[in-house]
Amino acid sequence: MGLISGVKNMLNNALGTSTLKAQHAGIKEMAKSVLSVEKSTRTETFQEALARLNLTEADIERRELAFKRLSLVFSVFGGIIIIYMIYLVIIHSFFAVLGCFGILMIIAAQLFRYNFWLYQMQQRRLGCSVKEWFMNLISNVKR
Image (spheres, helix red, strand yellow):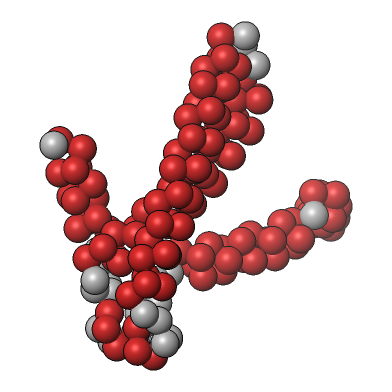
């Protein structure tokens, strides 16, 4: 029995199982915090938010224009990255494709962010759902 427990302890120490378990628990907690959705305690209308932030309609129009420009910039960057990814696939550089895919996901997240904010400003209401935004996006594309 002593030999087996000694080998077991030696393997645990060599593999660092206690460290792996601690890292696993940390990653699990981090994933929980990142993936959890917190409900906002503040419930206000768009007009109340404008009053609270001392914004005028001119400020909102400037913001809308800035968000449209940012959406366009991120769309162009995304298109360039997609073209470059296709080129990388053609020359069989698959690890570089993975890196470009990561960059593309960051660009897509930023594009969604600014486009969603723009949608809320155009609708003049806060708390729009992603489903509403997506349905509006699809209906604008079909026209």
